[in-house]
Image (cartoon, rainbow, N blue to C red; front, side, top):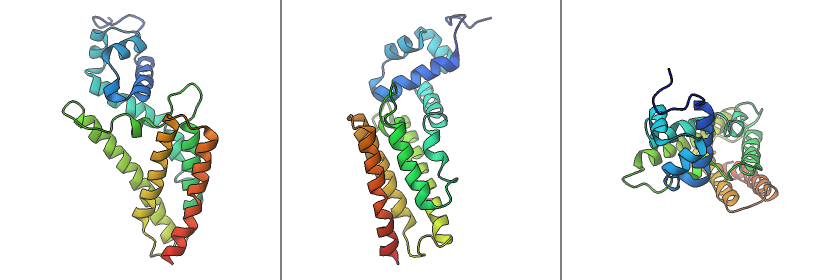
Length: 203
């Protein structure tokens, strides 16, 4: 039997994907309940019955984004033979992901909630932890490069990881402001010019 208030044709995963798109485009605070129910094709009781709250829905939407839209960005980090190639691939994949036709521009993890207040503190903290986790992934890949001799032992893995994460975050903002894919790819390629500088400075 269908839950009370939920249409018989309710497709939870499809509704979640619609919610993800709205949150991605408008951010957590900028998205109203009316925005969500209109996009998902359900009424408020159905939304609460299926997801519990706007915050729970957002968390599920972020997980969906990370496992689908954001997956290509980070999947190559461990697959590339060198750290330099891994980071270059990550930045170029970001440029492509942030500028896909028909999709909101920029990164949902970076742009959805930045300013914490009483109503969104938990959401902001969850996204902050995810961004920190991404930097940790970069640092671990760079540490492997140091261990393999790709970078000198004096290289600062944390600083290099933070630099490239900052570049990626900036690309997300540029994309939201309307930068073309060509421009974003140029940022990615130019950021890699710093790699040799990091290696030389640490030598």
